[in-house]
Length: 303
Image 1 (cartoon, one colour):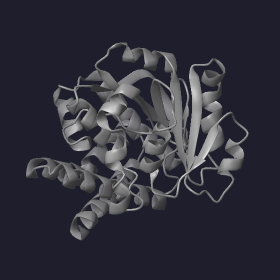
Image 2 (cartoon, rainbow, N blue to C red; image 1 turned 120 degrees about the horizontal axis):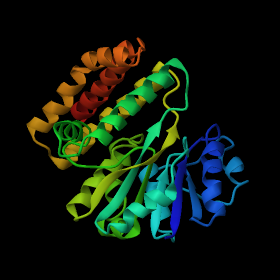
Image 3 (tube, rainbow, N blue to C red; image 1 turned 135 degrees about the horizontal axis):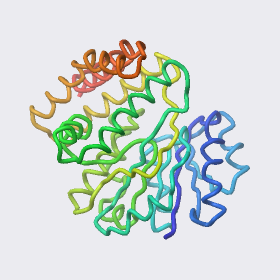
Image 4 (spheres, rainbow, N blue to C red; image 1 turned 180 degrees about the horizontal axis):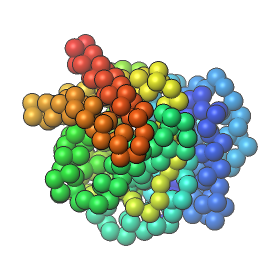
């Protein structure tokens, strides 16, 4: 099995070293054939730092992450392609185990769960939130009540993979058009870096492939460093979800479930605060979901 790695960057100097360092063991063992970086006009030292590693660096005119992904797909030569965020890094993830998942020819995409290496108050909240969902998804099948509800709220009914690290087979990417259908997201909003991964998963499932999560490790992913960054991130996610629902022409039930689940965030925040003995959840999750609602309704009203 040959694996290409694609990383899109933009002013990622503070995280790209950790990202690339984590790939070097697999690269030196020849499990990773090539590492492709597509940079979107960084003005910091991103490319200078990346240049110290065995990578190929290309440049794109700042038209969004999906433009970078699609451009890289035309260059990558691997049988499988790993898409990794520039602020994420492989930790105890076994790439060999993840790739072995593809021995099932019906599997087209495999997502890898993330954890937060940030031990700050906000970092712990993000990590506990991610860990809660990971444990619930591992404990329940996609067809369980929790699984169906989770995928209806987050994936709008589709079983999907997303996040800072996922691997796709080239066969699946070619069958679904790669990220070409997502290129117009940039024109809907220049900072719309989501939900192309969910849309790809849905197309893969519709094409007869499976989109699954790997249970053989996790990737470190740095969450927003402060409340303002959290707000901006979730506003963007709200816009992305609104775009997805608009594009897919989803019915009222799915849209209502999506919104109502966010309005119930104070109850989930209370549960998480007790579960993890972390009172910061009492404002962290409601703030994140309020920002999501703001982005969601602002995008829908403007379009």
